Length: 160
Image (cartoon, rainbow, N blue to C red):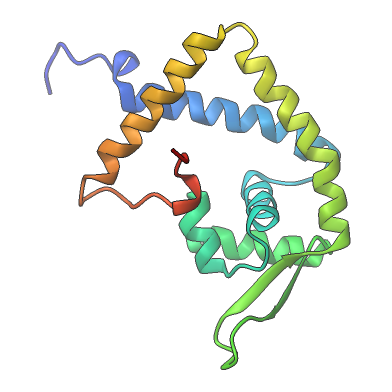
């Protein structure tokens, strides 16, 4: 390894650290109020966004491994926040939907999550924030063109 390599200036590392810090900060809110873990939060908000979805759909969209999604869904179901139903005529795929309790939990959690997002961006002027989002989208496009990169969900593409 090169002696000139500095992990703290390596872009993938910096992105991972920032992402993890933001995720942990958000988790303070939904853990405190509803006892949810990161995976459970991601499952809930994805089901809210998409309606009835399978574990495979969630796995493909929320950047979590299938076993972690399955455990999160099971816990959310035991807490009464989601429910499972047969999603296909042949019964092979289970559809996961929010319950009234799940919708109510999100009604309480989302405003707190939005406040965290606002706190992260309030010191950044509009032009810099727009540039930041454009740079993020460009990085996504580079990965979209890379056959060795995991595909991005169509739901996470920024509309033109």
